[in-house]
Length: 569
Ligand code: ATP
Ligand code: MG
Ligand code: MG
Image (tube, protein in one colour):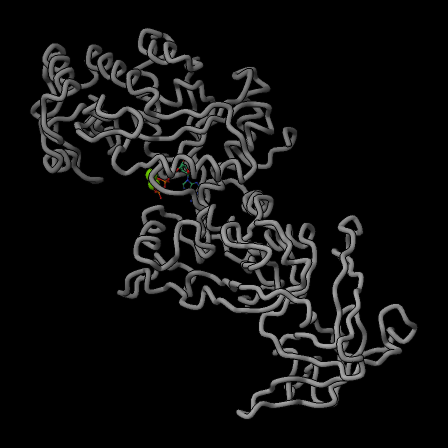
């Protein structure tokens, strides 16, 4: 992994190591704990943790907890679980709030250096003074306050003397800059909100750009990888790092040392890459939260959700998701990836890793009339057709079976290969049966098929080679275990649910058929599955034993993905 380019970021890292610019690579993944991680985050995680691993460096998990009120310890735990589930481990777990004292001292330094000031403009006024893309901004009337007055006001902001929103600390950069981010951006705001880690210690909180740049610098991050929308923030990121200059000012980070945290500040380099956008997916935490709040799904971990925990519960594999990220690659090109590519990555992983079992979604009784009443035997099936290391299992076979209702047609369409009245089909692993009689109930519905089994065609006998058109799966009606099978499909019925401009709310594109619950039958060996065990139910698709609700005596399986792409035109 360390010798070829693969992408432009790995190439930069490689050159920085080769030139001796860095002795080791340090990256970080900095989510805000205001929701659960989603498929888009998987790209950022695989990139930052992946590069650290490949090049023998470190990656920190840093919770960007600078927005008290919106953040929750429940999300912190969820983020940690999800990162580990994807297959990564952090060097250090940090919180931006670990550095609140550093940020405060850094702000005092900027004021003392004459490059930050306290502004009394309201948020609306500040917006108006900021100007537009085509018109330069105007200086605030408070911009030229003396250092002494600024220090006094900022210390009083910190002491809690002023009301929320009444004053702001701003960087003094350039109100005429072509880059609006440099028009004296806010560094601190007053918010008297209890913080989940620091309680009521702070009535002021740092703004994202300031806190993010200094957190990276504090942790000695060498390559700070983020998505393209931060490209225009990079000059401000560099401004914060350079003006504060933590490396040369250890007095600013005594609190970090005192807390026993490793501190070796350095100048980080921000590099941007394009976001992961997937069709049929939502990659905004706010919108994912809306799906939960408005009851379109059963929770953040609903198997229809493209959160990492939703996809986990759905049965998607970490290896399949990592394969997707590798396939999509890293660039600065924005694009939308087809959801089918994700499904194919999951199939590819499961094809190799999932043992085979048999189950029936929509049962139709099939009686083999030339077997004795009560006949039962045990057949040995291989667990994987292409990999002997999966071993074998015993499958009970009996006179009465369940087959899939759709494997029989009274009036077959053209090209039909499955069972018809008077026709033959192979029962997987058993032999060839012929449908002698179709039994109907009073309402005229097909209740049962009465068949004969050709004894010469039993598996292992010379007659087993006899050609018939179709092979179908089955379970023993005497031995099978009743199971709840949740058949999932895409959550939206349009590819770009949140971009569709048809005057309807975006949630109107939720696919009501995305969850279908059926009561079927599975072979006993499948019922014994541990939670999260994945199987290929032959001919039906890949299924996973539900993480939360599956029990051996009351099995619950989720369909992960079909065997083939059924959405392709
Ligand atoms: P939201 O806007 O939904 O809150 P966010 O981007 O603010 O999401 P964060 O928790 O701040 O979410 O993101 C943590 C990291 O994950 C950031 O560095 C961000 O760039 C990255 N990230 C978020 N979404 C994507 C995506 N779709 N593709 C790649 N990286 C992403
Ligand atoms: Mg965010
Ligand atoms: Mg965002």
